[in-house]
Length: 486
Ligand code: UGA
Image (cartoon, rainbow, N blue to C red; front, side, top):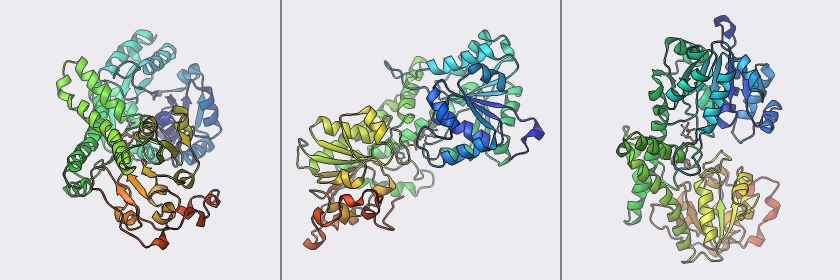
């Protein structure tokens, strides 16, 4: 993709190099544009300049290296440089939940646009990519045009982002769709030039007004959250009958109108997006006087939070009725696999609730231990699955990392005090565990009792090289070609 010069490719800046911004800046450089990334965090910029991605995202370090080597990607902490450099300025700063309400905190977005507007002296397009409440782009347009010496010449567009953590590179370079929220033909033409490589690939494009573009993003995340909570509500029904939510989800997924994606029952959704986005959307709708239209999102949130409490109930039941002094191996802390993000992570919330009830919780996550430790320093963190499982009374699989899916029930069983497993993500084959003497429990599924097994398969832990396994990866705990439930 490298004949962009022939169509007068715009120079790109990306303001905010967090998860979204860093991925966007790197990807635009990979697509052939000259890109300048900006952040107020000097440490982050220093890391990016030297080829280090400040968070865990598979494939992104390789793309950063490639983009830096191309000479098209640079980083700065100087906003004057940004204003001079860019024809198109993408604003990718965070919109976390406010400390004192469900509303989105827009202070970073407001500051970024105001700082740009005060400095830009030639016609340029400001493009918001952050997730914002409806009406924000219209308000910001007014604000930047009031501030800017260019007045109405400085235009603003909204271009929501749909990338998933863990798939950020693929979702940015090969998105399902592009959405341009614009208020003029000029803005649309500029965005078409900024995304030419993707449009030439045939990625579908929706051109809309500013408010619709803002709404697409929050509506998409609300729909995904609703789908997850729907199947988890069905799990609640299953739990007071003898029905099995896994089979139910499978049967529903075969209806092509429903589909199986985001219909995976379990501990529910977390992360820096879905939970705060549905709350902010509900809050905004209430402000607009149409709260009733999305009141159900409150229920979606409640169903989701109840799954965490119910998971603790199941672990307590497995432990025999009380958690005091019970040793729990908490497998996973990140909000989902292939991420080190622990924001609103269901796994970590469960670990915290267990700890508060007196359990002795040992957490192991392949990537998120450090972030989890910063948030909950009181929990005990270890560097391997084997250490977490050592003498555990209950093993709780809370984030479905491949390493946990593929663990060998016998080798794991040799480490624990009791073979009892809670599968919080429906990631394991129950028969594989029960046939090796494990009690198996999962949300929305009938209790699966251990099948009696001959004594010789239950070797005491001392007969296996427990700590010799560290430093050799986890190979000894992992069954080659073991089941990997998609
Ligand atoms: C989500 C959206 O999927 C992206 O499209 C969007 O761009 C992003 O938020 C954002 O707003 O920035 P992400 O937060 O990376 O992406 O995570 P998801 O893959 O959507 O998963 C969210 C949560 O739902 C995870 O905790 C996951 O474990 C859970 N989940 C997902 C389920 O419990 N069941 C499922 O079937 C699917």
